[in-house]
Length: 386
Image 1 (tube, rainbow, N blue to C red):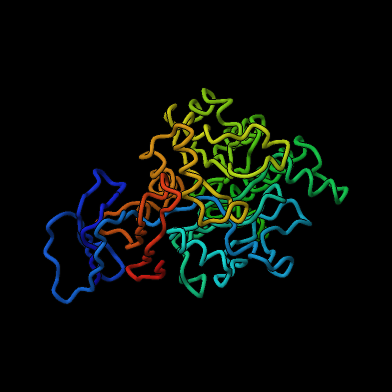
Image 2: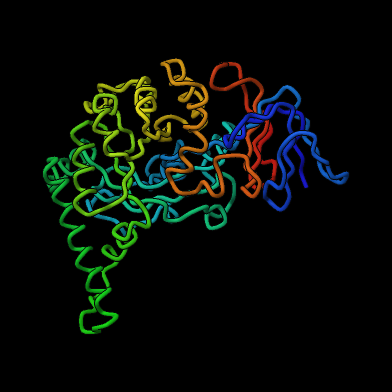
């Protein structure tokens, strides 16, 4: 049993608790509040003068798939010879020994939604995982959590270099539609075969991998920077009645009314750094505030390792500097990404029954450049001490 006491607790599930306590047992939070009865046999962490928050949730990254400082040997994020690869699974490419996981712990990031890059029109499935462990099977929170699709410059550039389709935005959309039509027919035949065995289709691994998408069990995770690509993604999602998240959403502040009408969550970033592509020329740290003020649910992301994952709080802090309220910024790296990715029953806030994933900071990392992570706890175990 573990107890954290005397800290300033941001639960992200109601009011903050000053000088509160959290009691942890069997990997779960079993009590939280003030003046709790602390078991005599508990290990106690005195968080006097420290900030206690839920473990941070990174909703879109590639941690463990583009390994730090290795090059080709550790580059497992894109099977960039085939634009349609829905059957690929992030869990088969993640290396838990990657330095990126230690970086995450040093930044208080306890959950990462990680998966394939954006070379392909359909890249494969993302997984939500804990950032501590040796074996990926033991780190999974939810798998699959989404199906990656990509619009815009990335697939165009990759396949233009190979002199094959798609090299235009039209072809990107057409390949996605074609595959979804095939998958829909496959699903209809598969369902009909329960009554009519003659309709059972030959097994197709690519099409089979898209069944959870068509059944709205998981969303498509759309890599979209430019406004027109956002609209194309939404158009196709409507055509096939799919759930969707809009990831990056660089020009979201230019199309606020349309995004509000669409009602889909936006995962904003990577915003820190250079405008390395044409489609990023309008990026701004004001985007989170503008979309949040319009009532659109947002998450702030690093797209690690584009921005190192331990700087998730810095990205949220830059959004605060640009006008986003501090409370909304905290939500955008805790409970909102957990809700958007469908894992808020376990992570994203400090609440009885949830996983004991906790970050303890000296100072406020959203407001103070000198703030540091004192401790990171996953499943009730101290996995990092600063």
